[in-house]
Image (tube, rainbow, N blue to C red; front, side, top):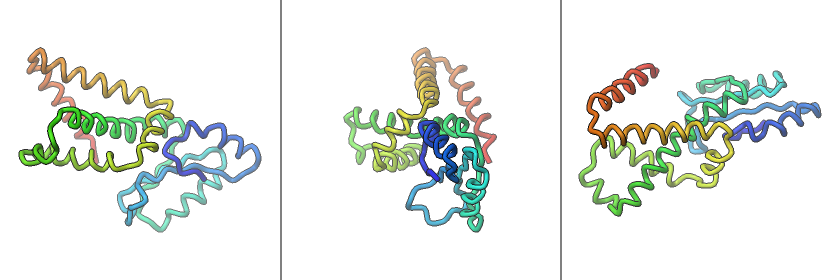
Length: 185
């Protein structure tokens, strides 16, 4: 089984293994190697044509509290473009903007808000992670451009609303975000 963050780049290799009679499946543990407990963590299972192999992989997590999610290979990478690609890119943009500002983090932290502290904590985790892995997640996902375009478009919208002092548009943007996020578990 593969445990990669992206599946579409492996499509041909996985199909070739299935053609040769291998019992192959694809999973994506949505947590890092430092994770101790699987309660509330997700494991994505992608059946590539060998249902028995997928069932055996799922059985490895049967005694855990991990949430098991099945999806197609294409759905995986399309959704991962937002779950990983967008969240990574947002944090890359955040710490790059801070770094390019010339302001030092300790000075900003002395007057920080709860929002800034939370974002800085996440950005620091991203900055310490494997840059080559993040590069691959950004560049190898054939659906990644959609998430990056959404980020660029959203930043441009916020910028336009601020530059034009469009309070009604800004309020509607935040209310739309609130409505969208109310659908969380």
